[in-house]
Image (cartoon, rainbow, N blue to C red; front, side, top):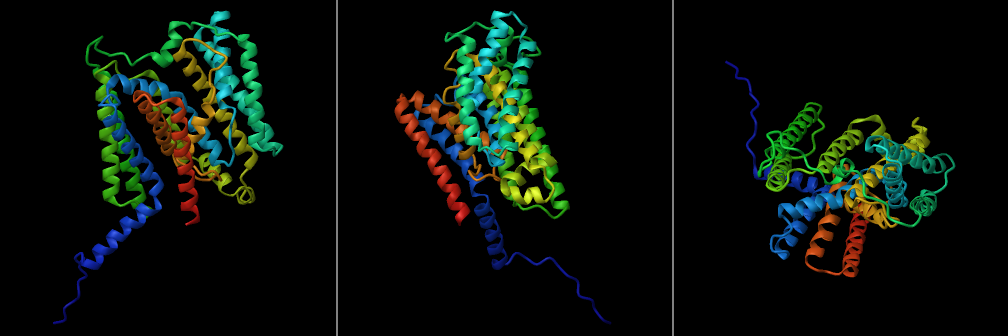
Length: 405
């Protein structure tokens, strides 16, 4: 009687184990920037947590950290799209100041309600972005020149609107945009349960989305991240969200601006990863001529990125004005440097076509934690600027090294 050979799954031989280690090594090598920045943020937070005797991770300081960096994170999402498309925007700081001045004039001088005034300000931001994007996209004027001119023009317009003086205070309802917190459904209590529940739900939803996406990748043979890395990364990320929510719940709860930031992060992650428009932005930044030959209207894509940047800069201007409770002629000074640095530190390429939303957010918080930690330690602003400049230079050098390699 003839026996048939039945294929069996071979045991993991030493050679197989070596191949598995090689897969892990090659994956880490190809994703070094993404994992490196995440580990860098953790290391920087641990360093300042020790050096500040635990002050960094206290609920009060974490709340201040979120409020201080909210407008940088929001603008970094828009700047990422601009940089990925192969451009730059130097005017965002001046737009923040101009929109804050416009909001103050509308609400303080003219008594307009904050909803109508905010809508007008967002429209004004879109018009500013469209005006700059038009010259860049359709007249092919370098974005560096157009936005440098815009930086001067919008700063002058803010000075003219405010007549060189500060204007405020804003209505209390508008101030809640930046200084308000999620109300507890069960009424005012010492522990804000609603904030903890929101954090746990957000962590579970994100984990579910990641698992669903991985199953789809495996189904189509597109999965490239080892299972161990996937489980560790997303498990730790979910645990960090829950721990952060708990710390927030022990103080005043989650700030309103944190919910805005989270919603924008989810939206732009979906936009860049799952939509045709997002893929076209990357295509234009990667190779504009090839994108144009493939049928993409590159001018329209570049125009969109600047309109989007104008809207987000206007939103950041509203949040910053609400936090200060006044509009000042110097508002937004130097913001463009922090925003651009956040994108480059987070992995965006100076030549375009490369960058991730989460990387930009991580880059923004790297800058924010460094600013906050050095301030608590009493390091002078002069040394702070030098250290931040060195970190930015190292991030860009690392990007160029990887690309040449």
